[in-house]
Image 1 (cartoon, one colour):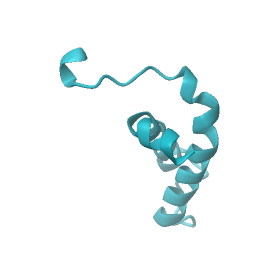
Image 2: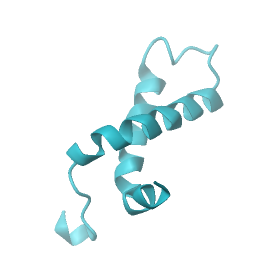
Image 3: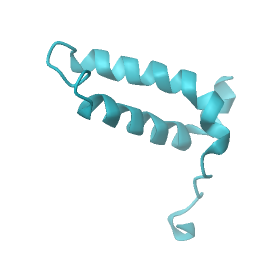
Image 4: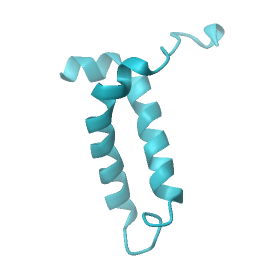
Length: 68
């Protein structure tokens, strides 16, 4: 399972960034009662759970910037 995340690291980080953005802006999670460290940990854990399910539906990340 670790190899799966190593080969798909960029896609995983894109999903993690999206979920982290959600937790930064969403009214419930952006309150000061939830610390930043807890938001990062929660975002990472949710990304770990969701990525194997939805990772196959993401676009492939190009190997070089020229392919963009």
